[in-house]
Image (cartoon, rainbow, N blue to C red; front, side):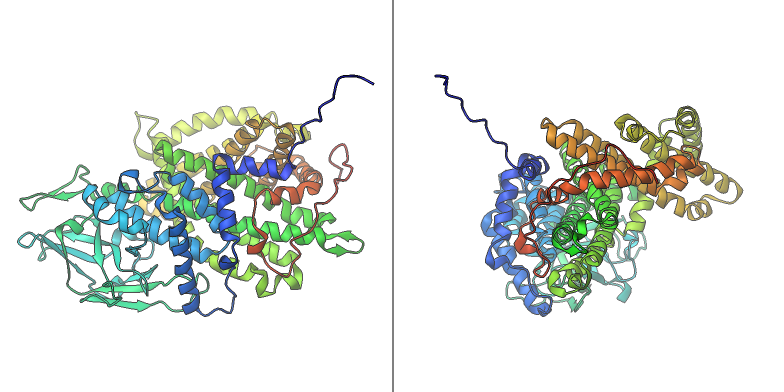
Length: 637
């Protein structure tokens, strides 16, 4: 026997634990603390039968719990007593969204929309006066932008704020019923003050306005009594998010002092003259709205939280449910219907991390990025919840399982912070403008058409030589994945710009824009898919743990192959793939789902969704499935 004592090998943490550390990143500890927070018995999700009045009060009570934990100070500047860490705050809120969407959204109204409007649209005087009370909940408020008759046409709102230089004040008015502020969070019950968006008029007798500006307008006193001139109406029971007190607001000669205008982008000088470094009203408006981009990142992240809830419940159930001697998860149909959604969730996770990083870096294209991903994430969340509900069968239809509440709560995510259709049109418009700037000798859309045509000529030449390849290693090549997703986006941009130019020449630009809307919508999704592909590949390449890297590579490949297959007809029609290639994609997708299947629960366990916030009828304690022997490659057929 050797005298040398053999030290035991250091045991690795379970794969799910190591993978969770990757997903949580630098905020692993904070996210774990948030998981403990929402796992408290006092944080148990409300029953679906809870009346809206009780749900509203419970949500406010949970807001107070968040304040007590210090979470709500995190996004604000340290000089006002804040934590100075918005990314940490966003990570914590993303975890809190697993527990109750009303809580996630109501705190978002208070500390995001209301508080961040003051911070980003106001100046030092506003920060000093309001931020300390906002982050401690001593001043509850909301974001009064949307109007009954305006919808997504925010620049065309008709609420007015008339400046009177003699009294150095503004008078806020709602000219008609269509101008009422609508669906405003915190308005019906709890809010004391609103950031009200209105058309600024320097002369009450003139129709001219200086465009949309934001004003701090009190709507209640500390006793909860409505302020004179303010009309408040409760929106009542909604499809979802009934823990939030949404309301309608009207203003009749409501006078507010000079300092009520949030004046970062425009001021009124001592002589009563309007001043702004941004001369054009539309540019000033979009600059102002652009500062609020975190709202769209926030919706993307909490949509992802709901997606993770649904996937975790569905896969737990499928692992435990026996069907003719096997688990439901062993069935190919189950794998094909749920695992591509899981891959998409992982792609979305890494994409949302990237957006948070780019927010910190001040990326000038973040507005476009956030619009595309918000639309993609919120649409995907509804599809995943529906699929998870169906997978659960009759058990999934029970209200205690939370699929119904989750779907209803997230439904409006496709509408607020920008209707998804409008956001996709915004993405296409911004990208058309961005690419056209690369060429200086032509004007407008002609620049884009010429430049993109030159790019696509070389791309199509390259891909035509590869379009018939059906080798699985070809589809799994990160270089190919990046290029094929980029090629689709650029080709769609070229087709869109050419079509716009042709119709505009024959008719006019307005008609052209209308006739190209479906092309613009499709382009926006191609743009989002390209971004998600790039960031997923980058995340895989960054891994040091070989086991994690291998698993994430398989999931990344599934995202790539499923997305390519979904867009297969387009690739064939545009000459980037041949029919045998798209047929091979389905075979490879089946192979990848079989390969990933033994790790399905590991992948959802890594999300770290506490069992206490999941449904109570589907089994959430299923043991991880034992890995099965895998075939050497994709099967024919």
